[in-house]
Length: 149
Image (cartoon, rainbow, N blue to C red):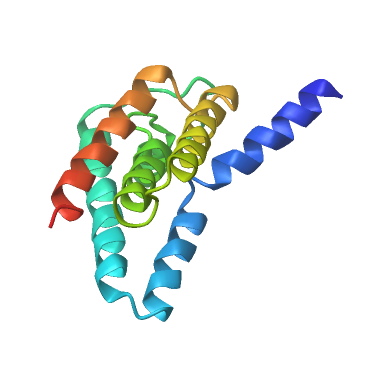
């Protein structure tokens, strides 16, 4: 029962680093006519995917819970370094802190969410700690490029 509870909690937190949630945030800004924010986030995620693809093209690292693959694209997806979840959630964290969250409580809450998403990737055996560090670095690098005025 306890394991089931933790499995569910971490599965829900990992969603916040996923492409669906990221896409919904982008759409929120697009339909809210905040085009500059939309472009920053959209361009940022494109850069994250391009850099990750190039890294995984030349460097394959199995996930803690190995994924089977049959083709080239599946092999890229089965590689764990860097963590795209970590890169996306880091980019979102920096974005919201820079443009919206000025209150220490909101910044602390969003940082706890960031830590929970990162922890979920290890708990669910999707990544090693080094994969998360690579993703965090990629998210920070992307933030420097797209979130500086």
